[in-house]
Image (cartoon, rainbow, N blue to C red):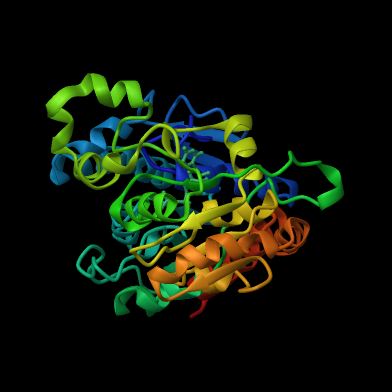
Amino acid sequence: MNAGPWLSVPPPGYGGIENVIATLVPELRRLGVRVVLASVGSSTLPVDEQISVFADGQFAALQRPYNQVCGIAQAHLAGVVRELHSRDDIDLVHDHVEAVGLATLAAMGPAGPPTLHTLHWDLAKHPALYGSLDGGDRVRVNGVSASQLARAPLALREHSVGHVHLSTPLAVDADRQPLPDKGEHLLILGRINPGKGQDVGARLAHRVGVPLVLAGPVGPYHRPADLAAAGDEARQNPDVRFFLDEVAPHVDGDLVRWVGTVAGQERDDLLASARASLFPLRWEEPGGTAVVESLALGTPVVATARGCLPELIEHGRTGLLTTDEEELDDLVLAAELLDPDECRRVAAQRFTPAVMAQRYVELYERVRQSASAP
Ligand code: UDP
């Protein structure tokens, strides 16, 4: 399982890919899969063996120029490839390192192990990121939603074995875990970023007079105090500029609040007590972990019908979707008609870690078969 050099697994707070891996690996091991994790030394996820090049996550370095970012990923991958050359007990590599990981593992040629690379991003706008893949039948990709795959460059679609929806350990039978009472607030949980549409949500909150909590990091800043202390230099980051210019003018600390990154019980309580989760998306959301987390905690989803949202949300049952941003105002108010327990029941059927792991085991088998086909 190649997690990459950016964050420890599980991640300290924000960390979409690392959360997926932290959710998947325990279920795989329960199914009898032996897991070697290539990550950073500070990862604490129980595995059978760990390979680390860096002691700690290099997340902060993601703000550096692109070639330096790739250099860090390459250094991590060089360690992984060295290990793969030196042993023959790894039946398959499940790779999560955007672009660079797949290219590097494909370049090992026919002698390399079968490889499944999970796409985590919306790739339609980055057709050149992957280029052509020369790993032959040994290298395959999967998406995290059908819509993400459909938008992926042809070179990737040609190597696809299908999609696996994201899941959450929060998806349990409704009677196993009582939830807090619902409050008044709406929640947008996620990175503050134009694609996630926090500016749309903030304006909506003022129009309809419903409290809105924005939770998530702004660029590398996890707490409002850290961003305030960073001064003008912080504006070099595009997400910081977006927040300061488009969102912050509507953050009054009363009706609309930015609470920074939330984690653990605080995050779960904020999500479970929300009247609805809002996703006023401006990009094609590829996988939507926060969407399935919301359902698992009995919070209906109100969203623009972009990316994977129509696959994850049943309109009128677990959420309300629209293609018209202006309709969101009405949908936010109508969300209280949806049944929180129904959201949880659907999540407990569709989005458990066990469902996800079972599906990956099937895909691993397909990848191994196509790699060994004459
Ligand atoms: N997250 C969190 N705290 C925050 C903001 C986000 O724990 O303050 C988590 C969120 O619960 C989810 C992940 O970060 O598990 C974000 O994944 P998602 O697929 O929703 O969005 P991405 O950032 O990968 O586009």
